Length: 449
Image (cartoon, rainbow, N blue to C red; front, side):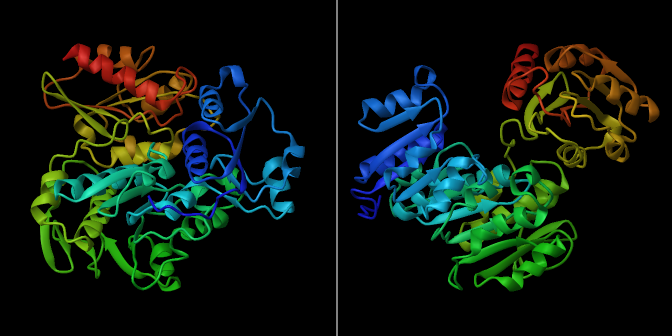
């Protein structure tokens, strides 16, 4: 870690705890800052706040008093999930207090170069692929950022021979000032988080910030399957490295079922372990990073031909008496399930779907369901999904939850079939998180093995 003096004896407010706030508070405290933490959860229920108090950090819990900002803070580090129209954030801005997120802190202290990955879909899979490939090649990479490992905590322990492979959300990128990755990836840009950003333009602008401090010595990997990303390639100072499944580009691309990087053959598409066109894109992005880091094709192949997927994201669990089973509990919306379905032969596929009813129908999913061997539906949207299945003459079964769905559908299937949990709905009608839903599915699979 770089021993910077920027924050020494400066009063800094950390707004919101969770993992990133805890890591930021500890780092700033170690750097000699006078840290105050403000979190909405009551102190008696707040394990992180209790730990920080024992470590000598001032904590204020249970509310967000606006007059706290009268204490002449030099900086606010806010939790990325806290919006900019939050009264505390608005008041800080009105008082000309700089507001950042903890990925900025990570950049300031990191001795290791940063490989930053953002985009709407595929961030976690691409981030994990990159880290696995670098590690397979003997390069030391550390996962960090939005993938569940607070960036500032990882950066504080990294050395110059490491690489920080950092997943970055639009929320995190809105709070950067000098942050600059050596290599950046934008997987794609679709509509998302409009409730936070207010418009698609604002959302995309937040994503685009990943490159704003980059120079020609840095590399920006862009998805040329999307015209908007292709258009953005002329609006950056970074050296652009494109990837595409549709055309030959000066980067990673697919031609006649083969994957190349700048005319160098890497592997056949059919060798990829993960199914689906979107996962070909993820692999191309990872390959582009790997080749920029001089990774051997042997190391690339060793990962891409065996990678079983990130947990709950089209994760291959294995076989049950000849039936392949996939856990895609992270598919909390129709678009995610559409992408999952694109990787399979519907004539062999049984889809397990359902969850929180947000008032929407499933008409847009119909083209992707045609020819399914069968469906199992559960949760609040079960009746809606049943009507969709019956409209398409797809055999459909009701079940109580994801566990009973897997148990009850097995007798209806045969060897060679594929069972896919891809709910197309949020989990909150029955589970606290999509992780809890997916974990139950995994536990049931293991029990049935």
